[in-house]
Image (cartoon, rainbow, N blue to C red; front, top):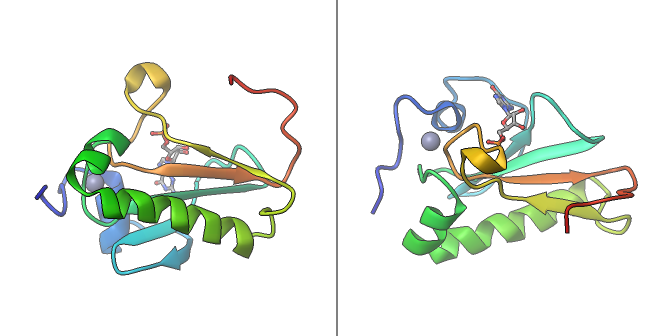
Length: 119
Ligand code: 5GP
Ligand code: ZN
């Protein structure tokens, strides 16, 4: 079991309430809050409350919570009314892929048409 919190981690501080965030959903083991620099009309981050550096380490250590991130992302999409128009889930993993906060999180992006993509 990983350390539930890393005292130097921004998202651990958000989970603890030490750093404010606009929370949109919460479960026993996950938290969803709005990204501070939204890249789309809806841009929400879903994180495990326990600290894991990225999605891969989370999935290896706790597959149930890894799956819960996807379930919660889908619920966010329904709540934000983007489930039908479509949305994108992104897990940046590693600095080279643009990860800047090393606490596992999935970006939920939607509310505008995606005309292009990397894949
Ligand atoms: P990454 O680049 O690691 O995949 O995503 C980190 C995300 O966290 C970025 O989209 C960034 O805008 C967001 N972020 C950084 N600092 C804060 C903060 O203090 N509060 C919130 N709500 N989001 C943040
Ligand atoms: Zn953390």
